[in-house]
Length: 355
Ligand SMILES: *[C@@H]1O[C@H](CO)[C@@H](O)[C@H](O)[C@H]1NC(C)=O
Ligand SMILES: *[C@@H]1O[C@H](CO)[C@@H](O)[C@H](O)[C@H]1NC(C)=O
Ligand SMILES: *[C@@H]1O[C@H](CO)[C@@H](O)[C@H](O)[C@H]1NC(C)=O
Ligand SMILES: *[C@@H]1O[C@H](CO)[C@@H](O)[C@H](O)[C@H]1NC(C)=O
Image 1 (cartoon, rainbow, N blue to C red):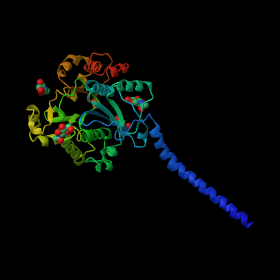
Image 2 (tube, rainbow, N blue to C red; image 1 turned 90 degrees about the vertical axis):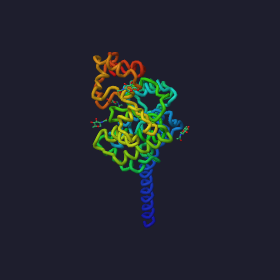
Image 3 (tube, rainbow, N blue to C red; image 1 turned 60 degrees about the horizontal axis):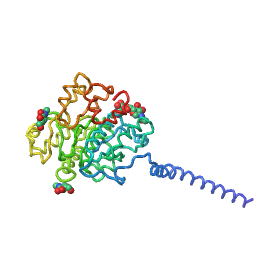
Image 4 (cartoon, rainbow, N blue to C red; image 1 turned 30 degrees about the vertical axis):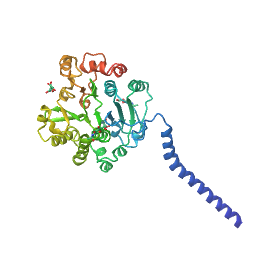
């Protein structure tokens, strides 16, 4: 009798131990480790830009950042799937087409899978037919490591602000340039000419007292790297989560004006040597059509005038924040359509009815 109850107790104990072990294995190994193993084996996942075996070449890379996943909670962002608009594809394609000796890195801010839908797949295939296009994902905290914002980024101010998508993008472009130099571009541009022979270290003016941050080029070393550091320090010190442009155009204008030591208009017009080798293009280069006139790119009645105004531009910038609702019909007589047809032919062809 006594022996039986001891045996019974032991069995119960063993059962409880086995059950606990199963529970522990389930929650630690199954969820955590199997997920990680699955990610490594899962070829549909983009590679991390820092862990992949082909890295951006310093000073010979064009960067695009896709940050829309930063609009959601980090839990949801585990499941991001590549979902580029045809206009974003066009920006990437035109950059790759005109700059074959540069790599074009498109960096997604969250763990990102390759698409399953046929339309998206064919768009991605069209862009990847350019051998210099590279899709990667990044981890913002890891990407900021070794930069002036490494500690600050962990406080999460950018994600808690009113414009997490845009402000993450404002910050990541500066980190990319700090890490690698090269050229950063917004995804709402069409590149019209090669930038390969334009010496690095430049920005473009939107007006005579405001620089844009949709295109920034810096050398990976020397003054270029020092300016990237000044940008990042200013971002941290003056970060304002409530204002859309404070950490973008206003930031680069503030920092560059301090570097130049003269009024911006003077630095732009005189092609001044006072800006420590930084070239400031006037609005013709990247911002020939101001944001208030974005419809001049998408409406037929402005075609002739807009083509004339942009004939010497390196690229056109479409001001996506205001223009994204203004889709054009494929084949229409608009400046945006004409330029897309010529400078991103594959994306334009994949667009379907509207672009
Ligand atoms: C972010 O999400 C909000 C609410 O869902 C939406 O109104 C807004 O347009 C989104 N912004 C971007 C840039 O995707
Ligand atoms: C892709 O984005 C479009 C809007 O641009 C949306 O309608 C669609 O549901 C998205 N698809 C996926 C798979 O997220
Ligand atoms: C920057 O790097 C380039 C290429 O390696 C080199 O030629 C140049 O002298 C460097 N400039 C400075 C200021 O270190
Ligand atoms: C910009 O500079 C070029 C010469 O470099 C000039 O032809 C053009 O008119 C200027 N554009 C503006 C808007 O001032």
